[in-house]
Amino acid sequence: MNKIVRGIICILIGLVIWFAPIPEGVKPDAWHLLAVFTATIAAFILQPVAIGTASIIGLTTVVITGVLKPGQALEGFSNTVIWLIVAAFMFAKGFIKTGLGRRIAYLLMSKFGDSTLKLAYTMAATDFIVAPFTPSNTARGGGIIYPIARSLCTAFGSEPGPTAGKVGKFLIFSSYNSVIISASVFLTGASNNVVVMKLTQELFGQTITWTQWFMACIVPGIVCSILIPYILYKIYPPELKNTPEAKEMAYQELISMGSMSRNEKILLLIFTGALILWATSSITGVDSAFVALLGLSFMLVTGVLTWDDVLGEKGAWDVLIWMGVLVNMAAYLAKLGLITWFAKLVAAQLVGISWVMVLVLVCIVYTFVHYGFASNTAHVMALFSAFAIVAVAAGAPVLLTAILLGVFANTCSTLTHYACGVSPIFFGSGYITQSEWWRHGFVLSIVHLVIWLGIGIPWMKVIGIW
Image (cartoon, rainbow, N blue to C red; front, side, top):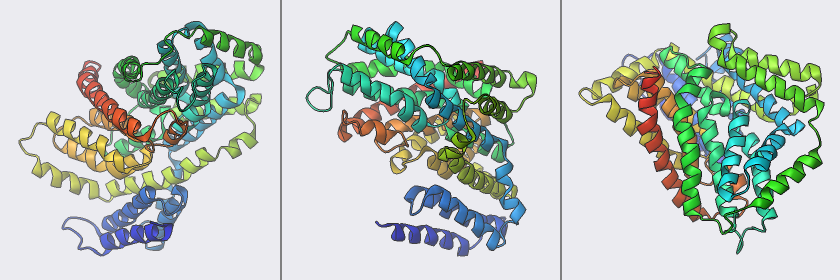
């Protein structure tokens, strides 16, 4: 299907909704906004144009048609949550530019890299450390984790093909899954998490703080971080079990990097300070976005990053555009009463059904629908509101529902080799076939569902999330 056909399909979807009979109790502006919003989401999925382009077209359409006033349509760009993501992208740039991310990985490898399984855990630990400041699986996994994992495979003579089983199959797939787990644990570990946070605020009037998300996810996240590499170790038993050469390789890499540069030391201080301020935001009252912007300010003033670096970080400005537009449309769907109408409609159909059962079923369907998506963010924008409303209408606690759906929008990335931006990078290494990825990815998705529902729900009860 070429781009023109896909574009026509998106437009037709919008027109069908626009001209369909408006249900009783729904305002015309709300219904027409739903038409534009749905067409824009369809463009996210079918991608006849870039996501940013689709967002700009949607933004222009709601104003030209009189659905929203210009000021209302542009409100999303003043959203502090979006600026949190923009600033966090700059942290990722700093980790890659200064080499601090690589240094952390090699330092851990030099201490714990004497077996293949330990190497996998080391890569997981590296990603866990860097994840709070890199809200992009592509930046973190593709820019830091993948290059190191791939170079380790080469060092052990494990290349795609006959030697892939030495360490490559296991280490590449394990490293990929570690990136997915870290994205789930930290609110700032993936941009789609912040979309969940903002939609929860707009739909239900409840805010998820950085600390709440972390505390809710840390225990099931650690269980996943320990269990999934071990499961893959059994699925792909590497021919090389002991890898003392990895410690030597890491040591040599650290020697070649030399002592920590001035910029690495400064970034480490900024990194630590930001983490402390985020964790204590409920005490200090400092908004999370401005903690990140404060860190960015220090990076710019000290020369860790230049303004050209900031201008060149296309991913951050791309997120600013599409998230500013889409989240604002979703917010106005709530303000114009469409969400309340839908919630009442759903609640009437769920009388007598346990909210726990509804929430479990919602999470399962929400996970496997991702076979039709190539973006975690598109998944969230298309499905989160409807699925969350269904669960909450059945009686499920808002924060529990929102966090679980936020997590499963990440863990579903195990399913396919096109699931999110970083998937094609690891799949493109050539170590894992498509059939292997789909088979084992399905198994891992079940593991995630069992852990996050079986351990996550009780744990979130213990700490007072619900």
